[in-house]
Image (cartoon, rainbow, N blue to C red; front, side):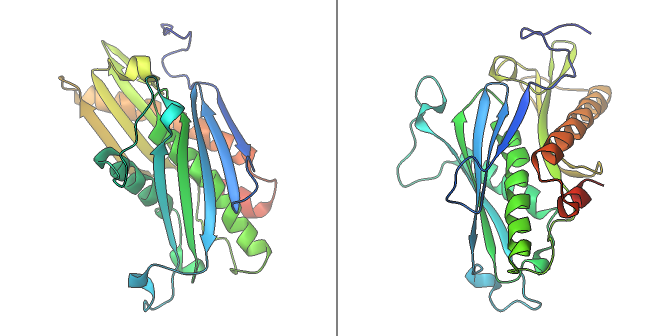
Length: 249
């Protein structure tokens, strides 16, 4: 295959590391690195649910997410809007929350809300996909710890979920685009999938371009390869316990 500017094959992920318990205060924390992109994902537990859920029958829990680019995560410095959450940030927060809830049985999390905070420490493309992949590991650890101390009866997660970017640049289909490729891609796509190969969300856009049915299938095929490899990295980061192993089939 043709090499890219960073020496990778077209269907090769950037180097991935997932470090658990990166900080001590939250229920669980993860530092995920995908190439130069680095995101800290923390899981915090509240013993309450949103007001609109309080009278629901049967009783359920809730999983939600927040996302932020830290000021020093980009060059030039990213300037946060005070007292406002921008449209892009809202979109990404909702995507992360939807992705995690897609693999969660909320009835097994009664009376609890788990917040996943995804803070981008360094951005080089793929921050939303890295956030989803890392946040799942933080969520799994938090849920496992709730089970271990008897706060909930069983693991509320059905399986794992991860996300990856793919794109078309010229006549080439690429996996896991850093900023240098993402900013010039003809087609940009983010794919969220479960470890069993089910789709949660597909976000695909032609950038002043269109893409064919053949290219769409090629993008989904290369994304599927990336998700399988990310699933292996997620499993390797979690404890060797059947409670976690069962999430990966």
